[in-house]
Length: 166
Image 1 (cartoon, helix red, strand yellow):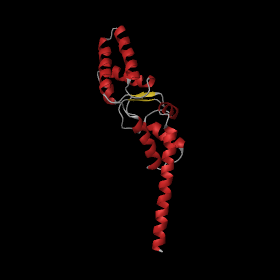
Image 2 (cartoon, helix red, strand yellow; image 1 turned 120 degrees about the horizontal axis):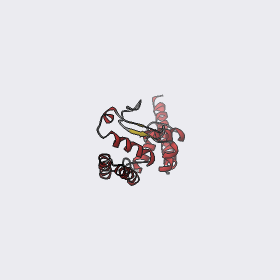
Image 3 (cartoon, helix red, strand yellow; image 1 turned 180 degrees about the vertical axis):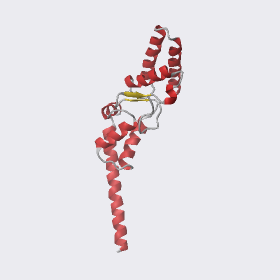
Image 4 (tube, helix red, strand yellow; image 1 turned 60 degrees about the horizontal axis):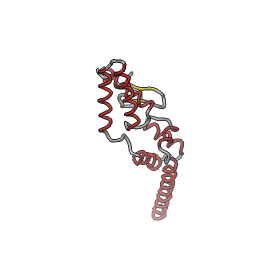
């Protein structure tokens, strides 16, 4: 348990490593079992806290009830209600905007490197990222064309300044 090395996150599911991390604060919480179930649910219901995630947590709450753990079932159901009130973690536009930023701002121009960077940001594998964000390659290619155009314009500008200086 603990905060994952190199992150500032508390509890979370790292699908790439097939591991969950429970923060020290959450480990000391009386709701630690519900927190663990929440993170395990991320392992089986990819993405944000949407309908698939809430359904899986509901199954866990029903199981807790069947096992006689009404407190745990109640904690899980409260988490489901919190998830219902929260907006999605990231919109498609936000995800694809990150792809563009990595290409243009971070100047990473190889698709596999961009895919690795954005999938790491969303704590998933590159394969899963592409599965849930099928426009990734097209967004990358468009961003690459824009970045290359910007590079050419920058080079022309610098060359013209050099001519003026001579």
